[in-house]
Image (cartoon, rainbow, N blue to C red; front, side, top):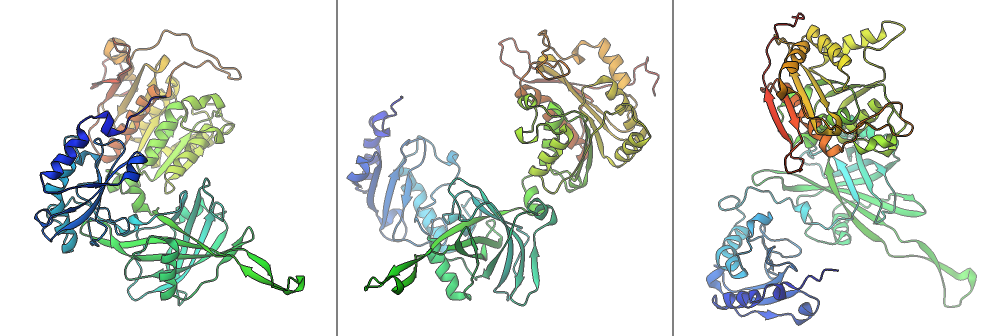
Length: 576
């Protein structure tokens, strides 16, 4: 095993430099020998008023194990600032949170000389802006939470003025009592005030995901400011002193009481919103305790002490799920028809769902085999089902607001009636873009022709043997050229022919057809560019007519290289 030395041994002279630099500021550090024995350098010292602007300040500094790659932790145990200091740990925020704010050439003396007084002034002034980074400090981020548990709610919920509390119905997805390794969701289904008026309801798309979870009751309390206590038990006591007691329910022979708590907090440097936490009181079990006489009939029931847990909140509102996307609002109402849900199509479905589209229809007739998972976006849970259903289920899991519909049939295949033609007519009519990921040239010719007739943009995507090349073809609605023009042009243009492996196909045991050998991380390059092209089309942004991918590189490294080309109507094409 590699022996990573302590930083002061790994970088001889660095520790001495830190001490000398402090001494140049008139500071003498006292080291904690117990910390050194455990492999940590911790110093205690007083900073003179010259560097604080408010008189001497006691600091405790702990150097990380891999200093100087990461900044030292600076704590001011005697201060209590509104900003730039953790309210419980008393850590000071002297530079931005990003690790890029610290350079290995910096030292502790630099932090004190250049940053300390700025942080102290800003922290004590209650004013935001100036030299600060544009970042909010939500108080709920300071609490210590139970791992693997979350209360799901909508950030659009804002308690009405004058409302101090009410009742909550939540859905429990997981186990009670909370277990260290098990994930539990508390889905806040509805919140009502004490008069019974419904204030908030979970969006139906999220509620549907947890429709089979058992309901629980909880008490909701809104407080004017967050409780400045780190321990869940102290927070509970503070809330209970302000609000009426609440008796909950039992699970697995244990009694519980739950409290949903809301309070004002920063959402950004200039805006204030609502913070939410969930408190759990787990009552101790009742045991019979013998009296001094020891007589069995004289046993006294005695309850063990309660334990308390704090659960963080997670925002699942529609705008919460879209907050990290750059797409325009019009994109969120778009509809996509996807033909083919194999290795390429399933990744496209996943990426489109994450991009926030409103509706996705997927058509594929094939069954998902376990061996498909090396390239398919799905997982073992869905093998044995149809690929179209698996792609839709996964899309809904990453975007519950997506309306995803799966159909199972061979596009253009035999049917006993006109149902396929009617279904395709409806789907092409409502789609804002059609994507063909079937990798079947016959289907590509058909779907491109149908899209042209329906005046809809069409995107075709396929890869070559070995996943060493691929093509994304974009035919805008009303384009003067068509899929046949592309085929004629490709036959005459070497640059439109992506590289392909000469390796023979393989037919895994149980499969009816041979397939190529190639890794998903290579194939995904094609899928992701197809999704990127589709989103650009939906956003009304310009796109290349055709993009050809090459994964071949002289050095042997598979570096994706795209070459874009424009297309025009081919003189031999008779389709337009």
